[in-house]
Image (cartoon, rainbow, N blue to C red; front, side, top):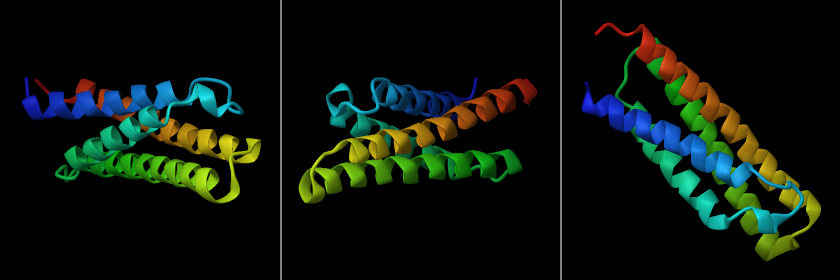
Length: 125
């Protein structure tokens, strides 16, 4: 068992589950979505991205790309939240944008988990 793969897989799956925890709920009600969970999802995604940086294989490049997409989407979601909170005020359009961006990140995280699982199954013992 490779400890590096265990830690990498841990953060890839943790990023997906925290992102799902933030995404789940009514997309028009901001009170159903915790800003702390969004922050945790961003941190876990960034850590997962760092673990994917050293892989020089083709699948590693795709894993890194999915992670970068998730990072950009989650950081954009937090930026929209801050913009809505402090500039224009929170309205339904802002809340839906926040949740939609995190949904896009969740799709990227799902692809990442599928690719990681496929790579693990394909690897020789």
